[in-house]
Image (cartoon, rainbow, N blue to C red; front, side):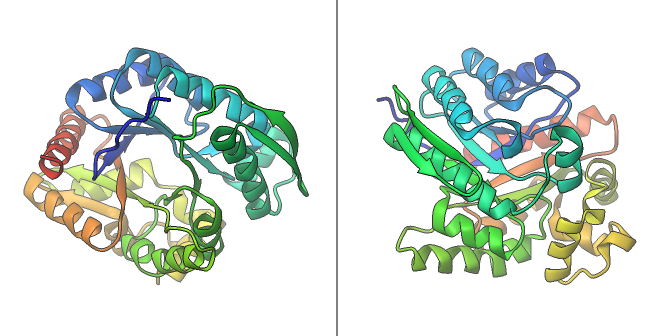
Length: 323
């Protein structure tokens, strides 16, 4: 089996767009620009993330491809393992699977399921997928999932990660996942309380602490207010979602569901400034506990030059770290 040796420090980019073709083309361009990793969300309007990444895998040769996140309700875990194995065979050593529950109201409306016990659902789902990908077989009867299956051509180099927001999700990731992926989370909370929980739970399970992939809003600009406008434009609804407002409260930002984004909240998730300033801020995040950084590029709507500047910065910063 071919195993890709990962670089020691990774800064990846969340990709979104109006169509599947646009996203695949953007991933190809990102590889050409020297960006080491890309991530796709579920339900972003650009098609099924696994299908899009399969197409991207066939058109690229080096860039890491991942989901952040794939909602578990969309397919049975055996089907997911089969699809991931297919992608991994096209792009050996380059695929990373991030799983999550998604937002309860969206999941219930989209899939017609009752959203409940998300941690148990994710834990069982992850067990089935990891068993198939890493061991080639699974025989499992859980509370919500049953699976008795075998998988040929296993891909034991595919990490199966989980989304992480509150304490329970970091605890579960520490015990069972190959990584914890934050999203729209204050950096000090993720590298403070959350990372401590991740470390303590993995120690209790007598396993290495899985990496913390820290989500960061990024705007490389000479206009410091552009980053704040970009967050409000691209990530505007997150503070009103109960799961996120509870997390923000733990991080010290009360009543986010009513207040929405305050300048202080935005500053807690944003890396913004010139190339030199952004580089110093990312250096600090790595120094305080982030294993890897996942950026969402934000800017004034339609300001393509600013987006291009931020993307070039990611490539240059990655090259500097790994030179």
